[in-house]
Length: 235
Image (cartoon, one colour):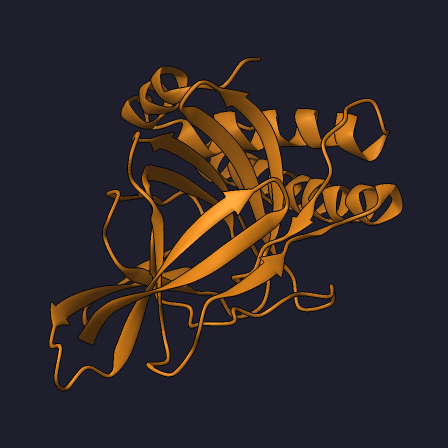
């Protein structure tokens, strides 16, 4: 099944988003685990595994995985960032907390510097700007399995996950916009190479998601059968 914004949004309107996306993720990561696609997982600088599974023009779809047992990288600036694209995401399992950040330009008393992220292949240039700001958390949103959330391009936020979680993330980019990050005032321009996983690591990470979704599906089916028995219709 080809997944795009229209398909995703229709599933959300129908109330079947997590079921549709769980099946789609299990199928496509099954292909990844068996080495039947060219998809390689990457260790994202924000601390999660990313499977870039589809790309079409200015739209893309990724599966994101947080798992404490896997090696991960940490940002060289801070977790607070803003995308150059609109994000629409569904939580497949786990808990995902989004902290929305208000940013105020304060040239003389800033606590953070704004950095522009310019990507070329697997290399990110984290370029300092003269923009100094203060920031504060304005809203905290906690999302669980089946929840869908959106983040507009340019909105500063930090995503916090403890333990295991996986999401499907759809992005729609805008020409001329750049990804941004907040970092230390004295931090200078530097380069970060994204770590691409090898075939074995990619397959292992894919199986982690597939197996977790299979367990959830099994529990859901047992719960459905129990509900039928309580209703008197399971005989």
